[in-house]
Image: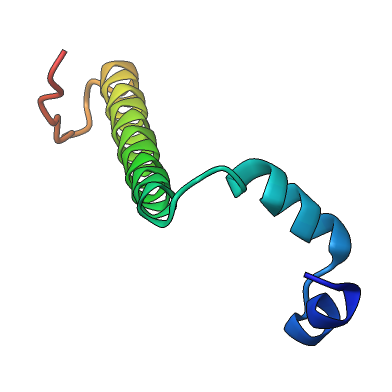
Length: 80
């Protein structure tokens, strides 16, 4: 690509060369598979973060129930 075509596409030269370095040797099917894997990885990271947050909330709820034994508290069973 030339500087002119990059400009028309709205791509900075630095970005083009970074992309070329990262994806230059890949076939089209390999690039598609890489994109799919990156999306799946992102989903899995979100799932792990949500599960970690749920476990943290359950732990705080459990501590709060122990500290305030007179209050009714709803404990959720958290798998180990």
